[in-house]
Image 1 (tube, helix red, strand yellow):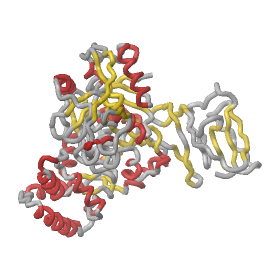
Image 2 (cartoon, helix red, strand yellow):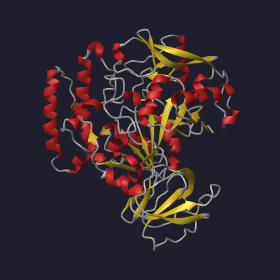
Image 3 (cartoon, one colour):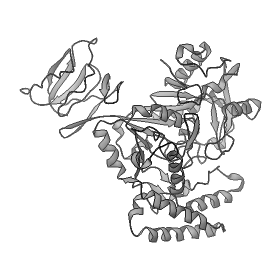
Image 4 (cartoon, helix red, strand yellow):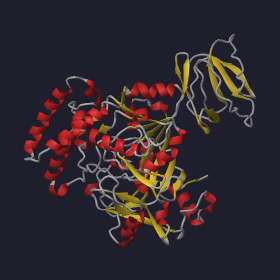
Length: 518
């Protein structure tokens, strides 16, 4: 950035008003004393913005480099929000950095769907950036339970646009069933659901390959959901896959047959003989339904809305400890579940991301195989499972349960750049007189506070800290002051242990059962 005028505050006590943002080329909000920047020459002093009191312009010669964002209260259409903002430059146009991320910090099943649903009214766009129909985001609409697998969790909010991004692998059959389900609640997905044309498709043969591969592993199964997700991502990276945009091409059937023949050779090598004719019939029926939906160029779609000043919430699936690079490999999913995956999965630049909201349970669960250092194979584990109703939303499989793992949680906060935490299912710990948190691992007789390279090759014993429980019901608590003091202490302990602040806790399955932590 070259020479320009800087709008500075006269006093720390004087703040920007809420009448709106001043207009003009190359406008920016930054941290410290500098608030706005307006490119120009010394003779071209900008007009004083009417909505800002107590500010003065000062000319600055030379490059201006600043990256810290300052809190401001600005009226953005539907509701005033207090947050940090910045403006990017696009010729003579400026637009707000308005992309926040919600993702899981454990092995999935953290309750992200409810949290996205809670935050959705604050945003204009909710966008899924990775994963497939193995996700199971549970929401309650009134007293009715709804599980979403591919549709973003903002779909029940009329004014919110929902985008399935290019980082997702999409099963048309599952999508059609989901659309029919949400239609029962009066939602017309043709109005508020959009699908990136670059999104890869899950074919019937992908499901067959998933099943054949898992069967071949015998006792070394990784716990696949058999939805065809892994093989679909393999075709994506192998440059063989079919994408949603291909459905609109007259050669789609030819492309499908060509890929099916490749898959059949692999299935033959597994001696897999299951008939998938019914799967294919279902698939092509669903494809015709999918072609009627809003298929868009996802990257332009979302970036144009950002330029218009719309707020975007990127919704993750699974959890950080299932990330294909940083999770407990090979017991991981096939996509990038961390905040870095938002850029690839939606086609947005890294500097557009502001808040990273990490979701964690007050304890820990895992579905399927793989390392789980704090797993409790005893009465306590069963008690957590029973009280928390810990059964997979997608598969129905009983979840493995254990105490919170702070080594893994710190790691997840670090690789995601988490700015705030949401702690879910806190009420599940209500009846416990004492609760425990794993602070370190004991590996080979030595304490370790880092995630090891290959957890499957090590014997890991958790080193626990005993914490006094609150031993009382919190389900009817509406604010922080009504929560037990022992829970206040637990929240403070988590803050300090992982280096990110708990800003919200969930104290029940209901949409309104969320308490703000000051």
